[in-house]
Each structure stands twice: as C-alpha cells, then as structure tokens.
Length: 96
Image (cartoon, rainbow, N blue to C red; front, side, top):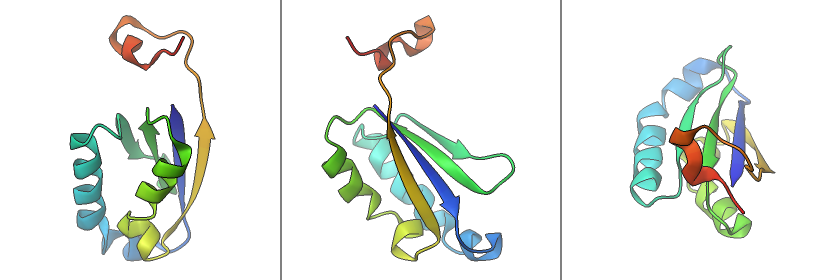
C-alpha cells in the first residue's frame, strides 16, 4: 500500500478554489477502489491519501489527474508501506 502526503505550496485561499474539484477526484478514485482513506493534515498544511494499489507507476499517473496537482497547488510524496499488523477493522490492509 502507499501513503501519499500532500503539502500545499500556495496559500489556503488558492487551495479552496479547487477543493470541490479535488473532492470529486477523490470520490471517483474511492469508487474505483484506488483510495481507502484521505483527509487533511493538522495544522492544515496539506493532506494524506491511503491507497492499496499495487502499481506505483499507475498510482503516480492517477495522482497527476488531481486538480491540486494540475494547478500546481501541492507537492506529493509517495511512501510505500507494508502493513503487517492491523486492528480487526483494518485487516483488509494487511499484506502477507
């Protein structure tokens, strides 16, 4: 799985202008099964997306479609993470 960390490069006012489009983008990729969790960082300097995709190149291609990326509002850092232990509710994330 991958942890995608977004860090805003612009003031929040610029981010807010594209937030609805970003949420629509997230919703699409939840429906397609690409994303499993997402949300804002605290303090609000960016966000985090969790993805259980197996192909990092395909994930990078999908991230290029994010309105925040298209409008150069955030930097993206992709970290591969192999969950070996989870709570029962998150057991679907474990990899063998």
